[in-house]
Length: 220
Length: 259
Image (cartoon, rainbow over all chains, first blue to last red; front, top):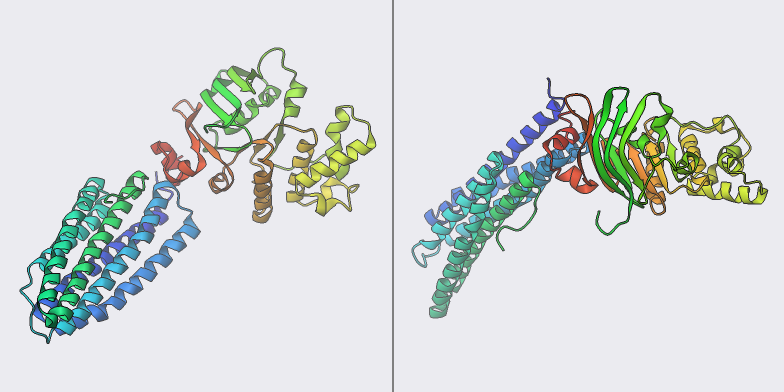
């Protein structure tokens, strides 16, 4: 028998693909922004800043498509939860991309200043946060609640790293007033990466909601 | 469904048309002063179920009913039940508005005259109150003695609701009450239902899932089994049925992929 909802199904499938594309772009933006910071690559930093327009546009496009599907197709049950999940998730992805821009701007500022210390913990934070984002997107695509739950647990590791970076940079600032500005910028960078992990956690919570209908915080 | 008084308690209800089992083992409780929607594909026994709540099925030949339907704890299928009094307590509104070919006033007064009420003032009072409750008074107060058939479809349907209200029922059964109406008239009926639910128990059968989602407090989903007997698949809070149904068959039906 022909699926009587095939038109809606096709549109929903396209929407899910759009979300994944947006997530991939946001992920790349964060990755590039940290590379720009570490390699003092202002061209790459500008690339991230300019590229944000594309992600902002996707955010609006996907939102409009969701509203249109709600208005025209009256989705119910899991279909409704999927669209609700997409609507919430695009905001998280858009914020992640904004943080990439924030980091890229700091990369440009720090590019012509002497290094404070070798980058060790910030690349680790970046790797951890992005692995969470990868798993968040993967759990969405595969509707894998187990992966989503496990991913959310890793937020604690990112938080711990952030506190470590914070304390260490505080010491640099106390020892040398000339280090204050650079150390502050790096604390911001760590903070943005910590936020990326929080947004990935939000996405994981929505995936669990989409699949099970149960909406609750997975890492409190 | 906790904490509310149960108006109807249906227990193991089977209904046969001749040898054909049309409804199989239906058990559900309907809380009072709430709107319960019955949804499901054509032929799943929704209307049969509704008609079982005031014994309207008995107007059809060869119908056999098994099980119990308790109204305020008393089985309406007991031999001592007075059918006229039962159908006064449990009124019904049908798919197509069916006003009598009489004046607007006489349509609403009809049930009162049947009951033997003769006091003109009392009748006028009840007619006005019923028309007000049915949200029709302002539109008809200056033409009460014109024919009911001159009203629009939506007005006729509200008149039929006023006619039911006039005899002071406790329950109003509605079988697709808006399916012959335009969207605005439909919304007016739904709005009216939300008001009436403060005082009455309403059970509505509808093909329109969005209508069930908009208007009802509880939703029951019926489906036929392999022998085409209607059965209850899932029953619960409307908000839960439409956001996270438990049974995959309910999910399939309300998302438009099944049934």
